[in-house]
Length: 426
Image (tube, rainbow, N blue to C red; front, top):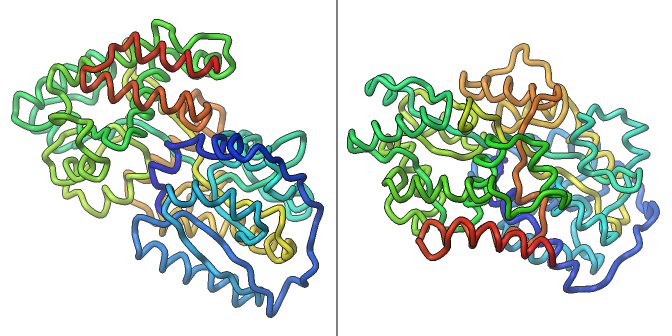
C-alpha cells in the first residue's frame, strides 16, 4: 500500500492517548492458546490505502500466504485519523486486531510499546533470522526487546519537472540560491514554482524538517530531540523564515494554507507547478499520473546540495493480548520475507527496511533512483530527520501551527520557533 503522508506526520497522537488513559498494561507473555495452521484465522488492521486497487492487490498477495499456511487473514482498514483514535482503545480492550501496521518511530509504535500493548517478538527474530537493517530494528526495540518489523523506508526531498527545467534552461539546483533562481524563473514563465499545500498542517512539519536537516545536518537536529539544543535556535527560526520568504515572494501557490495535499500533488501532476517538496511515497503516483519525466533531489542547503530527510513508515506489530500469537508470527514471517519485499517494491512502490536484490526488479527509472538513494541511507549515509515522528504531540502541534501561522502572516518565524521550544519544555 502506498505510504500515506499523514501517517508519518501526525506522529504523537499515541502519546496523547497514553497520557489520557493514564494506564499501562503489562506486556503479556505468549498467550498462544490456539494452534497455528489450517483453520486458524487472524485479524490484520492496516491504514486505509489511498488506492483501492492497491488494497485488492495486497489481499490477492496475502492469499498466497493463506493458501500455503492454512491461516486465514482477515484484512481490515481504517483511515489514519480514525485508526490513531481507536487503535489503543481496541488493543486495551482485547478485542483489537491480532496484527496491526503502525508507525515504527517512538511516537507511534514506541508509545504502544511503552503502554504494554505490543507483544515481544525477539524470539521470532532469532528463530526466523529476519534481515532487518539494524538502524530500523532499533526503532522497534525497547529495553533490549524487539516488538515489531519496521515498515517502509522513505525519504523527503524535492521532485522537479525535467521537461520544464529543460524548456526554461534551468539546471538541477545545487544550493538554496540555485533553487531560488530556478523558482524565480519558473514564476516568470507563469507557472507555480513550488506546489506546496499546508491545509492539513502536517505538511508544514515536512517543510521544516527538510529545510532544517539540509541546513544543519542530522546530528544537530538530533541534539534538538535530546534537548541539548533549543528549538528556539537561529537555525530553526531560519527554516521557518525560508518558507515565509518563499510564500511572500510568490513562489508557492496562493494561500498555501488553503491548499490541501491532494491539490498540491495535482498541481504537479498536471504540469501547472514545476516542483513539489514531498516524500518518496509520491513516486508511484508520479509514474501513474505525470506525463513528463521527474527528477528527485534533496532539498538544497544554503551552501550545497543538502541531504534527504529520511524515515520509516508503518510496519506490522503483534497485539500483546492476541491469543493467536503463533499464527501472527507466521504471518509476520511472510511479511518479513524477501519475496514479499520484492513484491511491495514492484507493486506498491514501497521500500522495505531490509536488503533486496535489485536484479530483475521491474521499476521505473525514478523509483530505481529512489531505491539507490535509500540504499545509501541503510549504508550509513547522512540523512536528515522527519521531526514529527520523533517529538511529542505538543511539539508537533506547535510546529504545524507555527508553519501555518508563518504562511498566513499571523506568526513570526521567531514566535513559531519559540512555541516549539515552549512545548518541548512541558
